[in-house]
Image (cartoon, rainbow, N blue to C red; front, side, top):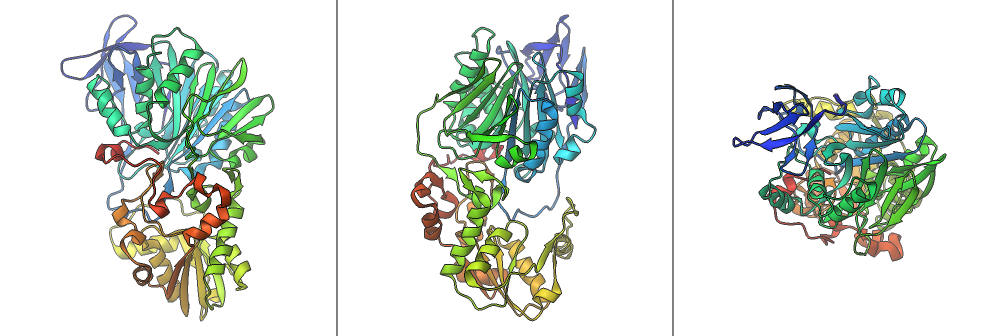
Length: 548
C-alpha cells in the first residue's frame, strides 16, 4: 500500500537510452531506474503518472508490488471488473467514499484506491487487497482531518488474469501542464490496443496494462491540451478523448476544483447519481447510496457527462446518440441484490428468472437447494413457481477470506469445501434441484455435485437461472476465452455429463427476452446470443491492455 502527496517534479525528457528522466525545480536530473515501474512520460506534454516511487534529487527509491499465484486455476465465474464512486461537496467526503466503496466490494476485491481534494491539491492512496485492508491505517481518511476535503474519487478493482500489481489499481493521478488530474474507470475499451500503438508511435510511454491510461494520454494530446488553466478545458479534454474511444465506460475524472462523471453512449455499465445534503454522490450501484444515506436522483444517462463544481451541477451530451446496450449480466450475477440497476430491482429480476425457469422446466424433486449467495433469489422464485420446498442445503463460509491455491487436485477440492459446506440432514436421501446463477467452465458446478453426492443426495438436478454462456465479454467483464466456455464447447447433454448431474437445464434466452419486454433490445446479451453491439477487434494487445 502506498500513499502519495504532491511531488515537486516537472517533466524533463527521454534520453537516448529510453529511460525517462526528470528535473526538479532546481534543475537537477532525476533518473528513474528502468527496472522499476517508472512514471509515464508523454514527451513534450507535461504528463506524469505516479506509481509506487519516491523521487529524490539524483536517485529513486520504492518498490513494485506484484502478486502472482502460481498454478491458480481458471475462474469459474464471470467477474465484474470495477466499482466507481464520486463524492462532491459532502461533509467527511473521504469517509463517505470509504463506506460507498465498501458497498461495492463485490465488484472488485483485488485492489482499491481513493483520491481526495481540498480544492488545492489531490491526495492519492491505493493498494492491493480489500477496501478495509487498503485503508486499514486510515491513510486516505486522514486527509479529511489534515485538509478540508471537498470531494473524493474512489475505485475497487478485480484484476484481469495474470499480473496483479498496484500499478494497475485506480484511480490514476497524473500531472498535466496546468495541474493534477485523477481518473477512475469501469469498463473496457475495445480499440485500446490500436490507440495504444498509435500513441506509442507518437512518443507516449505506458507503464500499466490498463486501458484507462489510454484515456489519459488522449486527454494529454487533445487539441484542447494547450488551453488556458480552467476547468472548462478539462471538460473539453475528457469529451475529446472519449469521442475517440470505443467500448464500455462509466468513469470519473477529478481535478482540484471539479468532478466529471461520464457514461458511454451505449450505457453498457451502470452509473447513478444521488444527493446527500447539499452535495452529490455518484456510484456504480444504488447500494452505495443506501449505505451512506444518499437519496437516489436518477441514472446517469448513456452518453451523458455530468459536471459538478462550485457553480453547481450541469449535464451535457457530447457523444453521438446510440441505442442503449445495458449489460443484462448485471441482473444475473454482478450487481448486489439490493441495488436498482438500469431502472430495475436486481433482486426481483433474479427472483423472476427462477420463476420462469421452473415454468419451462418440470422435474420431480424433494427440495430446492440454492448455491449461495447469488443463486438464492432465483431459487426462491423456482421454489414458489414449482411448489417444491426450498431448504438451505449448502452453506457458504463468510470468514475464509482469500487462500493460496494448492498444487494438487485434492487440496483444490478441500479449498472448495472450505467455502461451501453441505447440510447432510437436508440432502441425505433426497432428490435435489440445485439452482445457481450461471455456469462458466463447469468445474465448480462439478465439485458441488460431487460434494452433494458424497453427503447422501439421491439425485442432483442442476438448474441455471440464465441462458447458456457461449461468448466472451469485451465490455468490462473478466471472462475466459470463448473456447474455454463449457456451453460453447459442449451440448446440453455433454455439459450435464461433465458436471456429473442427473439433469441440467438453463433459462431460455427467449424467456429472458419476454421478461425484459419492450426493453429487451436495449440490453446487451452477447454472452448468450453471440450478437455484439461493438465487434471486438481481433487484436491480442487489446486483451492485454484491458482493465475492466
